[in-house]
Every structure is written in C-alpha cells, then in structure tokens.
Amino acid sequence: MKENAKDTCLAIFRTGLAAVEPREAVKRVLRLTNDDLRVGERKYRLKDFKRIVVVGAGKAGAPMAQAVEEVLGERLEGGLVIVKYGYTAPLKKVRLIEAGHPIPDEAGQRGAEELLEMVKGLGGDDLVLCLLSGGGSALLPFPVEGVDLAEKQETTTILLESGATIHEINTVRKHLSRIKGGWLAKAAAPATIVSLILSDVIGDDIDVIASGPTVGDRSTFRECLRVIEKYDLNTPMPPSVMTHLHKGTGGAVQETPKPDDPVFCTAYHLIVGSNILCLEAAARKAEELGYHTLILSSRIEGETREVAKVHGAILKEVIGTGRPLASPACIISGGETTVTIRGKGKGGRNQEFVLACGKEIAGLKGAAVFSAGTDGTDGPTDAAGAFADWRMVERALAMGLDPDAALRENDSYPFFERLGVLIITGPTNTNVMDVRILIAV
Image (cartoon, rainbow, N blue to C red; front, side):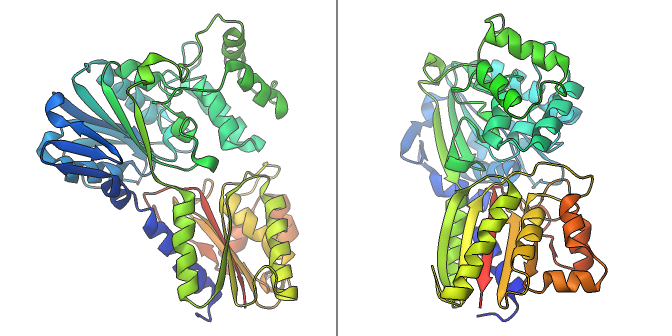
C-alpha cells in the first residue's frame, strides 16, 4: 500500500481510465472475419453493403475512429467525426472537426450541418457506423429554424448553471436540434445504422448519451417546459427558445422521432464502455494495493455539496467504527453530480466536491478524498479534479486561504492550485462521467 494518498488515488484512477480506453473498447466488440463484420452479438455481411462510412461526435471520437479504421481497413470509405478541441488522434480515412464544449460554437455547427448532409445521400445498401461519446450533444449544434447558435449557446449556459441533470439538459437540447433526438437516423434512412456508444450518463440511457442522434426519443416538448419551470428558467431563456417549445406542445412543430418509428427497426446500439467498468477496474487496483475495497455506486447524482457531505460521513464511519469496511479502506463511487452556480469563481463539480468533502473530514486523521472527470476536464478548467486529505483546512488557513469563501464563490480551482493538489491529466480521449475515491488508513 502506498504511503502517499494522492499517488494512491492517481494510480487507482488511471487504472480505471485504462479499462475504458475507447480504442480498445471498440476493438473488443468490433471484429472482421472474412466478409463478416461482427458487432457484439450481431453479424453483418459486408457484401450486402456498397459503402461503409463513419460519423460521430464526442470526446472519445478520435480513438474510436482509429479502432474502426484498424478493423475495416480499405473496406471503410471514410467519414466525419466531431471532437472537442485538443481531443484528436492520427487518422487515415475519417476526418476530424474540432469544436467547442461544453458551450457549442460555430465550428460545431458547421460540422453538424456537414455530417447531416453526408448521411442524407446514403441508400439502403450503405452501412453507417456512428461513434458516440460524452460531449457529443454540445459538439453537434444544429439549431431548429427560428433559433440561432447564439441563442442555443445562451440556453446551454443557463441549463448548465441551473443545477439541471444531464437527462434534463439533453431533453431540452433534443427539442432544439435538427440532428439530435433521432433526427440523424431519420436523415440517414434507409441506410443501416450501427451505433457504438461510450456512456457518460447515469443508467447508460442511449437516448440521452450525446442527446441520442440515432435513437428514438422518449422525451417530449411538454417535458422540456417542465424542466424550465422546475428550475425557474422562464425569464432568462431566450424568447425564441420558449416560442419554439410552446409551438411544440401545441402541435405546430413536429415532435422528435419516437422509438416506435419504423426508421429505428434496423438500427443497432451497443454500449462499449461505461462508468461501472471503470469503477470495477479501479477497485481491483485498490485491492492490489492492499485496501479493503467497496464500490458504493456508479449512479450517484444530485447537488455536489450534498453528495460530498454523504461521502464525508462515510469516511467518518469507516475511521470511527470500521463500517462498512475496516481500515485500510478504499471506497469508490461514480456518476455525475451538478453544481448550482451562485458565485463568480472558477472551478468544476469534481473540485467543488473535494473542497466540500475536505471540509467534512477536517481533522479526521487518515482520511483522504479524490474526485476527477474521466475526460480530463472539470468545468471550464484544465484540471480533471482535485485531491484533499484531513489536513486540507489546516494547510489552507496557514496559507491565508478561506475554504468557506472558496466554496461560497464556486472558486475551487485557485484554492487547490495554491495548495498544489489539482489533478491535471490533459485530454484523456474518453468520458464515462466521474470517479470519486475515498481513502481511510
């Protein structure tokens, strides 16, 4: 067992990341034998298809496309995948477009328009491999008529800062898009569509990941309005957005394609990587390092500070009573929390989690906490997350830092930067939500 808790957490985290490396994840499920392409349990005869093209969007798009190129070789005609700035890889046939995330930009809109136009020209003897991963929704901005990109950007910012869940955010996004919420599959018909998906949402709901461009949409315009009412967003929302949503509830605008639409009869969707696979690999590493290990849950969501309090309470229980595990203990959780922005500082949900949890475990000797985004970014920062132990508050006060003020202002990044405990990995080219690690020795 390592003595340095930060190094221990990083080793555990990196092992989890390796288990959901997108290139290998795709190659595990995509195999070519003679003229048969196997995708999971399904088999496609390549002689039945004139063309095979790749489309997609998400932070893991580049290594996923690499895997497809390696498996199909010359049988692949080409394609287009939209990725976050900096999340690239060398490709031979598939073209990459870099675009903005989490706020969509013009590069993303141009890419989405080009991608949609590309699939419109396909026929019944064509095969589309669609590669989707976290971030795909922001990277595919193609607003509906009457809503421009600036208004879509404003809407995205409002939703992100409201504390809404990714399910709620993507419900609205789908109903403001010409490509998400099943519209990409509708445009590609009658081509056969196979979607390979790296999940970044609670429960691995395929109609939520990247806002489900190739999946029948279960949500409705009415649900969009309920989300806006729930978070009291009627006033800040752009008028054009509210007009469109109200038209939808009244039937003046067509609903998104639903799961019973015949266009989805031949569509196939396969999850190739998820948060639980990452956590299981991380847990095995913790056991190798000598820890009693428990995976708490891969489905944790809710307000970040409240989730942090619960995790802090678990550490207190472990050290105080030996329940649910005796020390040395490592408790791992995953999922994705939300932050309701009230201050004007710089940070992200993982850094805020560690700050709040670090306050909870102050003085609890032997306790440490780590949280990081598997994509390598946390909010609008270059950090994946942060680390803290039972001495965080003491060290901060000695340096003239105020943990309460940092939390109040959502200003966790400069706080942890001063302490030297930011977790900076750079782009990981994967995204299966967050990993939180609690250590008790």
